[in-house]
Image (cartoon, rainbow, N blue to C red; front, side, top):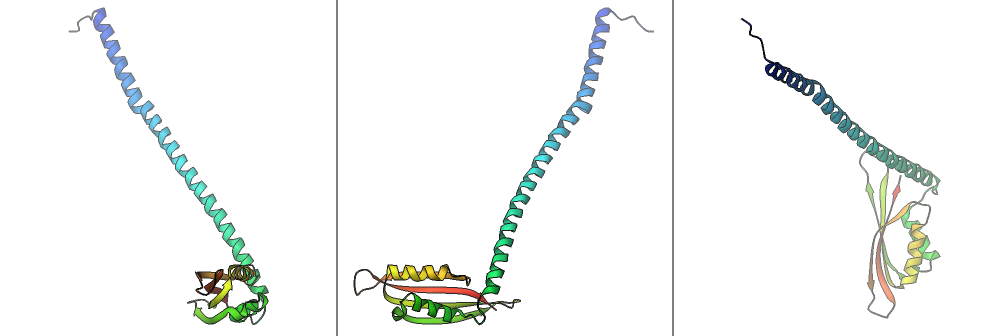
Length: 175
């Protein structure tokens, strides 16, 4: 027994049906597509960040490769029979500070799983001027023999004003 619905009831049923259809439409179509779009944007941002980091790492790697190639060329062009001790001793003569050298202690460290060794010389200067030390340090650092100053300690000498004592540790890589 179907009863005839009034206009008001029909409109209520239509409105409720429309609301249910809109709810289903939003719940199962609109909201999932919005969520998917947000996930895609987030994924894209993450991928862009990864790409940016990879590009940074690539440029760092290229810079390291370039420095390594330059170091290999310098290493191969170094004089045959090069020793750090004799090199530094020769530079003290060129810098005219040989008489200020108190001692020179050479040492070597062999690298594991490598055919290279690290050669070090510790030097002590007594009673020289800051200008003389600066000249010597410049000569050491600017040589093409891949020699680095690892440590430097400077102190005033007790004798006269303007004179210093210095302990210097220099190292290089040798075969």
